[in-house]
Image: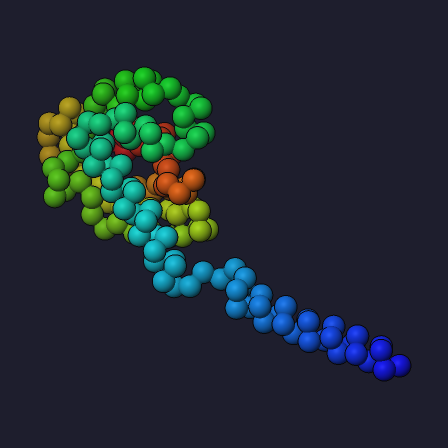
Length: 154
């Protein structure tokens, strides 16, 4: 009887310890600070990609593409499509505005931005379009779907 009571007490305390350990250490909850850090990381990567895009470093944009995008098109195909210049990003101060990020999961963030584009081959007035890009964290680096980069809103 005494032995059974001790086993029950040990099991009870073990359950309490495990419960509190899970609540503190493995809650799965993302703190507001972690959420901001994740979203900021995705925004920073997106701004870098747009910077490469703007300066014509399409090979570097390709390298930031997600695995599926790279499987669907070769680097040469992507660079060729980007060089067609259907959509040219506007001047630096008009390129990106109103950037927002929404964390879908710790490894997926939707970045939405109002982007400025110049007309065909950079001629004409700037047109602004709000676009969303899903960023995926793989092996510590944020990746983008390359088809979204190739998409021209007009």
